[in-house]
View 1 (cartoon, rainbow, N blue to C red):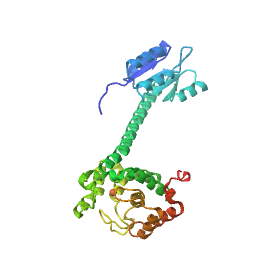
View 2 (cartoon, rainbow, N blue to C red):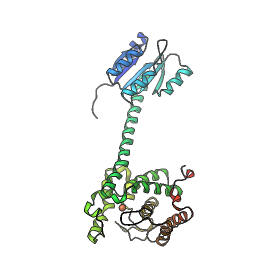
View 3 (cartoon, protein in one colour):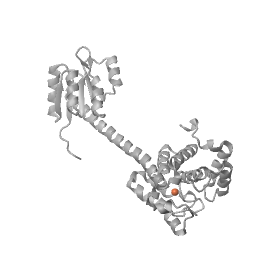
Length: 334
Ligand SMILES: [Fe+2]
């Protein structure tokens, strides 16, 4: 971890005596402390310097509220935590503090150990929130950029990954797959063809029939996807289901010729949803199949390409509701 030196604290209170005593406590604990005794001064300090933590009195003079500082602090640095100090805890003050999303409220007179432990906790929580936000952003990038990259490699599949996410999730909800597995399944659906990045363009974009050798290269894409995703060890299920998305119930699929429940239910859902989209959408080499024809194929392939229960469930649903079967209904949202 990089040593960034002492944490910088802005201390705001309109009573000079209070400022002095708090300064002593925080300085003694190793913080680099800047003091301000008015809202104006505090704001100008924040424009001059970036603080890791702000401690402010709730009332500064007759009219100013310390929580106004929160807004300015966040404009400068979105994750700046603000701790409010108050000698007069009132309902209105607490409400105002809550509305401004301050990190904590400390009642004066301050007990040094309590104040320091609150500061430590708030700084830690803020750091965790910042890291979670970074992870969330990285996930969003992963989830939006990678499918677009696959689609640029293989333009015939425009929108395919996103639709397959919707189909798999609808099925997974209907089949009561756990929330955790559903989250992994959505990611697997989004990234299932990521291994196509490793297939040469002249094969992927070839207009005519592929030769057996070219077909062998295309068939490597689930393994290449597994390889790419090995950088995400905490997403073990995601890469397993990506690896298995061309397996078949009867063992005739690839890469490993797995049988039946060797592929877990979420993986079998992905197999079926992926095929449904390929059939239901128009591609450069084929028209969209009518629902009745898809139903016929699912019934014929129940127990062969697909998990029979799953294939009949989808065939029944498509027969009764058409393509609406795959639209997430509100009662499935919970
Ligand atoms: Fe694939």
